[in-house]
Length: 345
Ligand code: SF4
Image 1: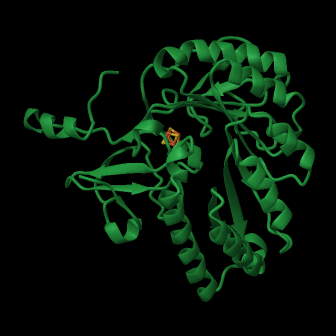
Image 2: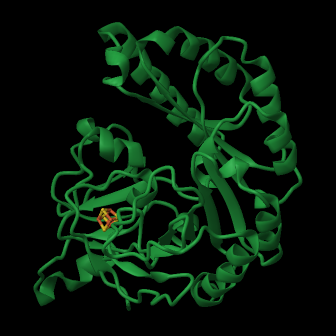
């Protein structure tokens, strides 16, 4: 059965979901190291983590990466992606040295940060070592040509995703940008969101309906150009008890408020880890299960964990396999095995 790609509210597939897994084999076989290089948002609960550790320098990061690589390469081979995150990550001294070293170790590298209007950073990135660049872009004027030309240049060697969050006052700018992007097919993936509370400038009904049309067109365009498949994480397929399946982007789980998996088994720690600016290591950025500190020791998980959080917000945490703890009878084993509910741990 092929996956239905579309609106969760139309398909109702999410009803009675018991398994959420990667739609693509390519994404299922990747291990993601989410590494927060600055302390702009400190996720780590103090009681569980080592607070006194100093920020890491380039040499530390490379040495600690070797520990991580030697553990996970046995399972994932060269499919390990280091994603460096944070508002100031582009300003991180020696980031290019770290990225080059990881590339030499046969890993993929990504930056997930805010757009800085400094050509220098992008020239540095354009040296052929970075694989993925995810930028949070604030719309401020309608002269997008230099910005799009810069992306056009970078995308020769880097997969690029733009994340744009708008309020009603930026809506006209968004329309100009979307026209340019859709007209040029320039292979930059775009993820849109709107924040109804920001400055109380919520989208009006007409804007909201146009906004959803834009999102739908972008999803179709991403599929046509294979941009979702070529990104390091992608759609998540849900399987329900009636044998139906549906493929959804992480933001759809949040938008439809289907991002609550308390009590479910979660593969965080097996498919990804999260490292804070001072070296604390968790299964994921929801900070469930502190598993060590790079300065001291890390106990890499070998089993999934029961989620104890009310909600799962970060898109990168949603793109981790999750399974409702199923109680079954022997007669159900074959059909449950067919949808992948059993696998050796
Ligand atoms: S909140 Fe954390 S433990 Fe729960 S499902 Fe999300 S990533 Fe997994």
